[in-house]
Image 1 (tube, rainbow, N blue to C red):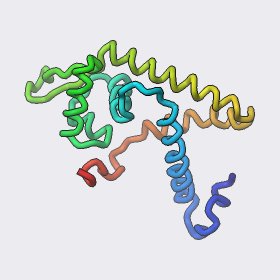
Image 2 (image 1 turned 90 degrees about the vertical axis):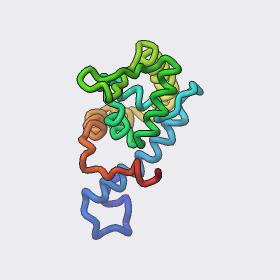
Image 3 (image 1 turned 135 degrees about the horizontal axis):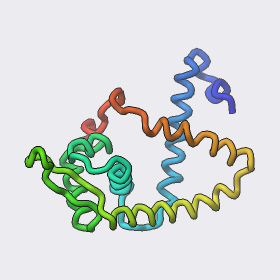
Image 4 (image 1 turned 30 degrees about the vertical axis):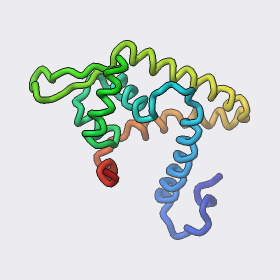
Length: 165
């Protein structure tokens, strides 16, 4: 569907605003699908996302990790403690400032994350098989843009973590 056809009631809107609206709506639908693809593992979506961030970015200060994941620092402290109790992360004093806690993913955390991804991929493969070859090609072509969007700096995104705390 052409973005300009997506919302006829917003004819005066700028094309980039329409794109942002459609991407946001699409992401909401994909998040629902994403959650439904997860096998029960005892990990919340936030816990899995935190492990993925640590795997991708390496050891991280607790406060930075909270900001990256969009949660409050006390919530991240509790999550990191639960993940540590499960053997999925370690929490250590920062070598340059002992007051600061750095969180790192463990090898068990990496294995857990890999298993979770594999289970989702297997379930997603069945859904992808139902799509036309054209739709699969469009999805494949969109992967670099999706990665760029996910990797975009979040500095100009409002801090919503503290709005609900």
